[in-house]
Length: 214
Image 1 (cartoon, helix red, strand yellow):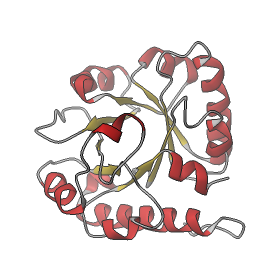
Image 2 (cartoon, one colour; image 1 turned 120 degrees about the vertical axis):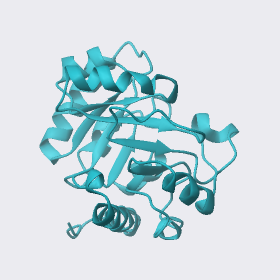
Image 3 (cartoon, rainbow, N blue to C red; image 1 turned 180 degrees about the vertical axis):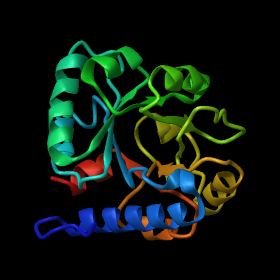
């Protein structure tokens, strides 16, 4: 999909790179076919109105809503569900399967330490898209559709204290697993081109996506 007129140059750079990565991954792995090229990760502190960004994302993208136990999780989630349905965007919920059921979400994103839940979650919800965070080492992959490896570049948020992998290390890790792998962490319009050929199935981000799609 080519973005129509009205999107910023930054939005085009992110989307063009994400879709190029997605096509390349799908050409070599059937598992990557049909995955969203772009994942927008929410963060209560950095994305206070995520439904506004969600409404502007290209169709086929996905939002990963991380409520982190917020008191207004259901209210915010319903706004996101409405926005994503209107935009043709998938909605994944971070960790909380009950919230995902309440919102009739499209899937679940698991913390790395809880990746082992994927098998049982998938049995209960065979139509859900299931992803998990990955920070290197040997991941648990059973039941998952994709991994999200981070931080690729120097990043903010919780990843700010972690050393960046760099493109070469990302390529090495992604080639050693049998699942599609998203690139997350420090993703920006001016560095995404360096990921072409690195084996990512798409891009994931927080502030860069929020800034580009407004």
